[in-house]
Every structure is written in structure tokens, then in C-alpha cells.
Image 1 (cartoon, helix red, strand yellow):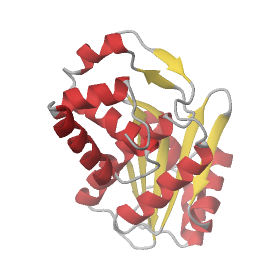
Image 2: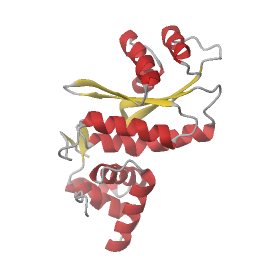
Image 3: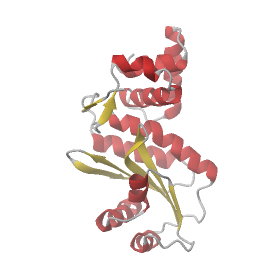
Image 4: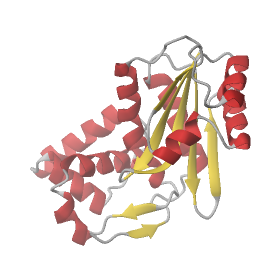
Length: 227
């Protein structure tokens, strides 16, 4: 399957504003999160950052200056990182000292992916010990998937889907549905995964198509905000 790299398909939406919106929504939608930060790596502009409060801003700043920390590790390895600052984990002592000083006790870092390729990561901080259960981690992962797709429509280099690829993508039901959710979140400037899913289901019903095929059409020909 061939793909091309394109710039923003959604005009007038700034990546930094969208990234902040993603972080703010994660803070609201994921349990036990008291502060959130997000980062994407975009060529040729470099790193773009967002934080919901001084806690995330200060601690993320430490790890980006030092080049080490769970958020960067999640991005580099494409793996979720859970760090309880009361444990014996000593992988990032400079980061851990800064996090504890800022009042954080648990950190969850989730990669932001496009086609399973990391473009950045989401850093979630809790002031509570042992804050993030398996269920919460799963919620954060499910949130991160369409959030990354939404960001791709705001200036991150993205593998575009052209009309010739739609037939192949129909066989990858979950992947194409996730793409469509990201498109709808961006088009409607609405970070809610649930509302994007509802819009996609309504579109599928209106077109008389099953969900994956409707999703493929949304990806191939994105609707306007009123569509």
C-alpha cells in the first residue's frame, strides 16, 4: 500500500492549540489525572509541547532538557510507561526528583501513534500513590488513539489515505474506524471520542453502510463541520 506525506488537511487549526486541547481533555476524561502534558515531534518544526498546569510544565521541562524521562521513553519505544515514584524504579532520577518536588506521585506516559508509528506522547500526572489501575491505563490508551489522529489533521506529518487505498483499508476495520474518529474530532473541533463515534454511527446509518465502510468514506472524503 502506498502512502504520501501531507501537511494539514484542516485549515486554520493550530497544532499547539489542538495539542493543549488533547491534554486538557485527557485530564478530564482519564481518572486520577491532576495534570497532563503532551508532546509531538513534527518535521521540520521540531518538538511541539502543551501542558495543562505548572506541574506538568515544570516536570516535562526537566525531562526534555535532560533528554530522559517516561514521556520520551514512551515515544522512543512506542510503549506505555507507568511510574510509581514510591517504588524502587530509578531509571530517571532527575525526572523523579522534579516530579516529587512538584507534588506528583504517579506518572503514566502513553505514546501517540499514527499507524502504530509514534508521533509523540501523552504524560499524565497524579498526586496520589498507585493512581493508575489497569482499567485507567486502558482508558488512556483508547483516548490516545483518536487523539493522535486528530493531531495529524492539524499539521503533523501523516500518512494520507487516497481513494485507491480505501478498498484495502476496509479489511482493517479497527484501523480505519480509528482514522475516521480522528477526522471527525478534528473537523468538528470536538475532542470527545464518544461524540465522534456517535457521528460516525449516524453517518453510517444515513448512508446505509456498515461502520468500517462508512469510516473509509469519511477518511477518503472528509466532511465539513456541518456534514
